[in-house]
Image 1 (cartoon, rainbow, N blue to C red):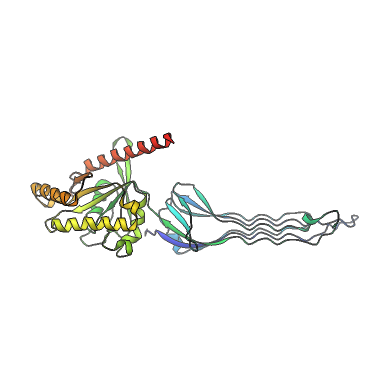
Image 2 (image 1 turned 135 degrees about the horizontal axis):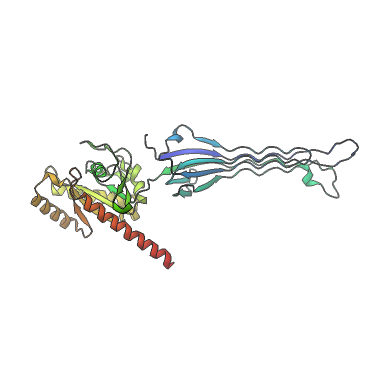
Length: 347
């Protein structure tokens, strides 16, 4: 199924039913008095997160959603039935924003979580409501109110612990295939990844994490060049970033360094918080050059970048170094979990 990560929809809550104008008219009961019932309330519209969905593609075909209207009141003090609420199902990880104001209405990060996005109209009052000691035969009623109508922007941000980033053809898709059961497209031309791919990395003793392959980031991605802008937002939910660098005979050290700096610049331009996210450097495709040359090149690149963080040498194609890397990632994620738990207990 084609991945769709953004959609605009219109939701309309139900209108409230009108109040009824009625008088009791039964044999042997003259001047029975007012008995017009109230209308029913209009149905609300909710957006609900579901773990069974992973795309917003359905909203390309259905863009308008309306809740049920409330029924009108009736005589004999019978109230109208309230309209049924409408539940619009979206994938976990969807954010909901009002198109007109840009207001973030909510962020659905857990299955079953729901968000009220349009409130149904209030019901109208029947004439029985207006009976008083000075007005025994009121002919006043009120009409039901219209429900809210809103245009909503839905954006799906993939939920992953680790995000892969780098220039096109850095080997991200190959790495994802090597460490998980995901099967993204792999080829020797740019932008083989046209949408985010998720893979589950399973280690021993039930330990594992989710990793996301994001389309290659090129210069100007944060301003809309290439495919990166549309998918940079998916990195915002990750806790750890892996930046893959292609070290091959056809790539000079200067090209690798320039490419690495370019990716970081695009991250920072898109989001300062994302640019400061914990990031590891991964030197890939080292099976294509002699081992000693690989060590020398990596050392030179690290020194030029003034890199002081974690770094690893791997070959995603052969699997060399991948197991060690995934173990280290798992350990780091567990450390972050412990730190977050301790922080919550301290508060």
